[in-house]
Image (cartoon, rainbow, N blue to C red; front, side):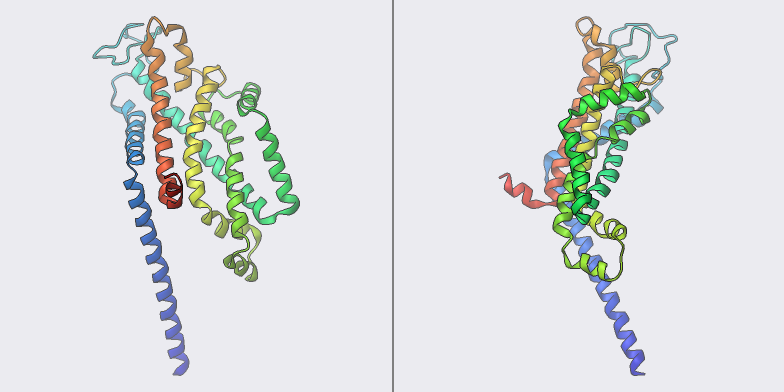
Length: 308
């Protein structure tokens, strides 16, 4: 009888502890959301980015013209009611092309950021946890790649391997976008690896891989989320640079950088063709940077206090 009561008491205590942890996590989540919503520029950036995403991904489904169709469309037409951004020399609706280009550029940015988080997060956690030779090898390789201008590396790799589709461009960018992520995660892991919960996990026989995946990466998520938004913006700019140089997304597909490249000779005669995709890139990057600032302040309020 006493044994049953002891078991029941232990079960109640475990449930109570689990409920306290769940309640604490929920309250922390509410605080993060509240702090983010108080950041006016972050909210503005979020609304702006959502509007751009809706225009890019849902707009083509309701717009009457396809980005590649050039039949029955006058060529080199100025902006009009039927074609708000005008038409290209080949007779393509430019609004449809801008929506398609925005869609592809955003996809490149998101996939690049995911690859950066996965590669950089795991390698940074390995370097911080293992230390010694593993840390030296990983971080010296990171330092070596930081010395070489990233655009030069991307131009060489894209020219050698080719990046004619959005996913090829994203893979090339993702292969080199993880460097700063690895540094950031390594710094966090260095401050975590001697904590009691890491020692407890080791004492229970957890492998280093399990410690990285179950403990270190989740506890580095705050800085990784902020870094994730910054990588999206950098990747979109890098893709635009490659496409402008003729090394990124190629026809029949389009991207914002490709549209700028195609319309550079029309900058004085039909300036709307040149400036429209450039303005869209600026709006996307500004929106993402505002979101990143808001997330940083929401996840770590000390950062906003230090800047005041």
